[in-house]
Image 1: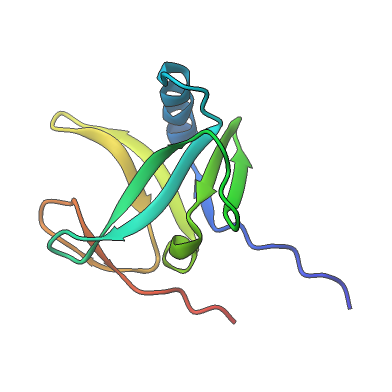
Image 2: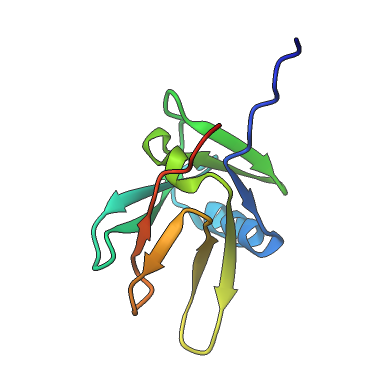
Length: 121
C-alpha cells in the first residue's frame, strides 16, 4: 500500500497571491507569509482571520503556491478544507474572500459566517 498524498487544505487564486505578495513587501518586519484562521465572533458565529507570519508555528499546514506561503492555523483546518482564497475589489470595498464548501450561512454584512467542520473520510 502506498502512502496517500497529503490533502491541500486551501487553494489560492492569482489575485489573492498578488495581494499577499504586496502585503509581504509592505510589512515592517520580515514576513514569510500569512496565516489564515477562524475565530468565534460576529452575528453569524465565526469570522476569518489573517495574520503576518514571521515564523511557522508547530502543527501548521503550509501551502506554497504562486510564489507565496499561506499557513493554516491548526484549529481551523477542518473549517477550511476545500476553501479557495481570492481577493476582490468592488466600488464599495476590497478584501480577501473565501469560497468555502463548509460555510452554512453568512451574515448580511458579509463580515462573519457560519461554518461546519468538514467530514473527512
